[in-house]
Image (cartoon, rainbow, N blue to C red; front, top):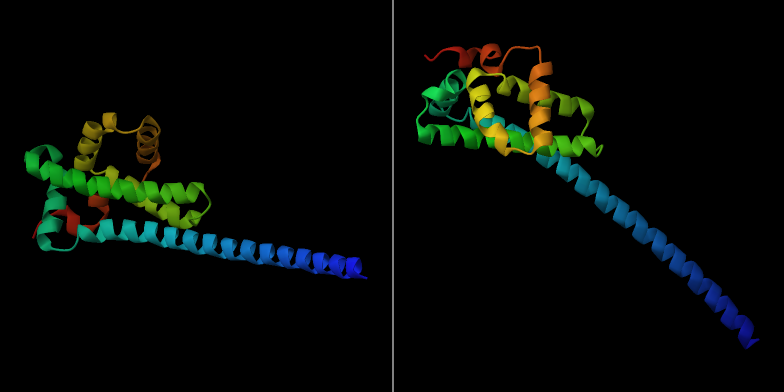
Length: 168
């Protein structure tokens, strides 16, 4: 009789362990999905922040306009500022690329970011910056960046947005 009760207790305990493991698996999955959603939001927000930062003041707009049209005419300090801006854009692009490759960023969203990145890099000044900095980049990223610019058939960012074309 005691053996039977012990066996029933073991059986019920085993069911409890299985239920607990299922519950933990569901909690871990829910946490992973939430983290993925937050990562996606962060990547898109990072891209938008990098984009809107350049438009935050008339001085920024004028500076980026000058940099996009003639990087070589910038002072050394201005080249550093522009490099920081372009690095920020590239870091945001790479974060979006990584999420897209993992299936965590909608392909249409990523294509929008990639097209915008190509339009930025197609600007004359951005191209001059890219040729200067490219040897310092990982080869796989340099190849990818060159490919997206080469495949992009639209206008550069400075050609397609009216407020970039000429200062007031």
